[in-house]
Amino acid sequence: MSAENDLADAIPTKKDRWRWILGLSLLSVTIFLWTTSNFLASTIFADDSYSKPFFVTCVNSSCFIGALLPLLRRRQRPVEYARSEAEDRLLESSESEQESDSPKKTSLPLTLRETGRLALEFCPLWFLANYFAAACLEYTTVASATILTSTSSVFTLIFGALFGAEAITLRKVLAVLASLAGVALISTADLSGNNAKEHRGDFPAKTKGEIAIGDTLALISAVMYGLYAVFLKKRIPDESRISMPTFFGFVGLFGVILLWPGFFVLHFCGIEPFQLPPTTRIWTIILLNSLASLCSDMAWAYAVLLTSPIVVTLGLSMTIPLSLVGQIVINSQTVSLLYWIGAAVVVVSFVFV
Image (cartoon, rainbow, N blue to C red; front, side, top):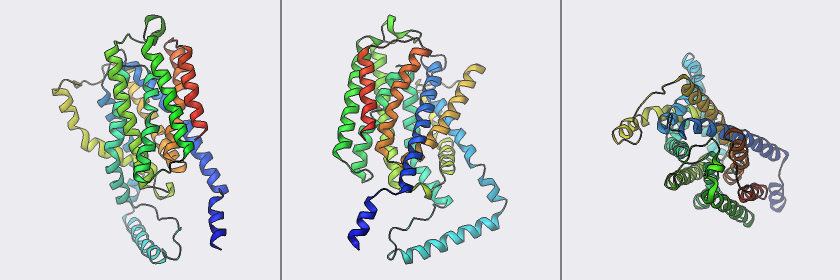
């Protein structure tokens, strides 16, 4: 009987297949929205018309608070809400008594307090990842930023192995190595002449020092992305346990409450002098970027829970060819054949995860 159960567990169920299909669909949405968001931010960062990544990231964070509005309805029905909380605790107690008899039973949904506590832990990782991802766009192109951010797959594999959220297999290791090889090819092409006048098109000229700063910031962002992908999967193995809009609503709320002192620090240090957006055009770009960030981050989080952190982070490498096409169409930039070969290698690495 035990052998039969093990065999049944090893065979993917129809539900598992649909979870992967849905997860990969949400990943596709994330890829499109993240690329769009990067180009929107680049239009105001690259030419220094409004290079305020901390302000933009804070606006993105504050927009998440709107996801908490449905909770106001609960406050209008406190008796029903209190009864619901009591029922949750009663069911939790009952489940703990039956846990030994049914160890694979689905866990109960997180309570509002538990969701808020998890969001508080998650908030710094989310903010740092998004801040550095935005800051690098002041110094480097969208494609280069995307390439280096895609190395988050390496850090996801490392952190996943350390924290037990990801099983390491030979196929995953080879996929990550292939992804890194593609990144190396593209980076070589980028630093060897893609910033030259005949290649950069409408993109502002950058020195090698500025490109190095941008690449470093993008790499730091990759570390943060890898860490918070593993953190989310480790803390919430089953997506049915959490309301993702509520979770990100709390992330936005805690971001606004805890991170506002950063305005003073960055202002007085001269890193980012405080200034509100001077034109309607810049405000529009920031708000559209915030909406894209909200939708893409929730789609990303569900994709992680429905598939796995390494699949999602490697899948996001597919933003590379999309960003390359965007650079050609939007900025009239051209890239070398080596660039395209590297992009193809990265995409192929995702297929073999």
